[in-house]
Image 1 (spheres, rainbow, N blue to C red):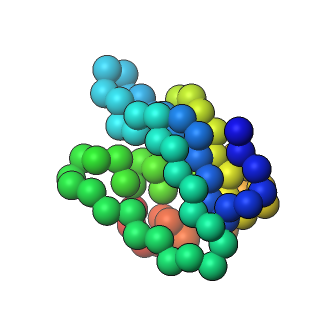
Image 2: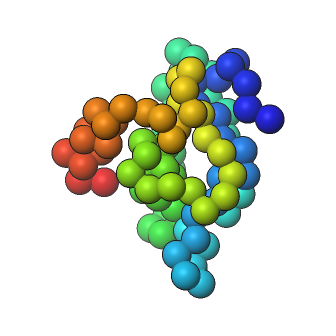
Length: 87
């Protein structure tokens, strides 16, 4: 279950595109004040994960929290920034 102890937290976060599972049951906990790098090979789901955390796309299942708010309620500012970074 997601609480308030972490700046970013996901539980079983999943995103499917037809038959492709881009992110599969991601459990992630990033404490406040930590610089965190999301690394992986091409096609590993890094961009899809960031898009879900910034509400550009909805997860197929699971849940995510960024700062004190559920990711689905973040402001459009995060989405605008991600688009400007061309992710």
